[in-house]
Image (tube, rainbow, N blue to C red):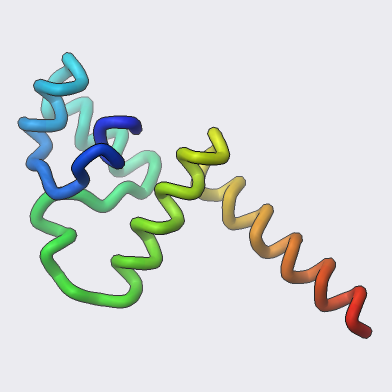
Length: 84
């Protein structure tokens, strides 16, 4: 995961070399964790930027993307409930 965030525009082969694993394993991890990298990042879209931010936040928080989303939604819900 560290190699994805270090330079997400690299190809799976470049990330694999840096991580010391196979390109196939890089693709498996990316798919499992919902990581966008390489050519897919060249499509300018708000959703892509949001996904990159979310991936970085999950890595920073040392959790999965699903856990990061749950934490963000829980915080927003609690803030909303306090305002009511």
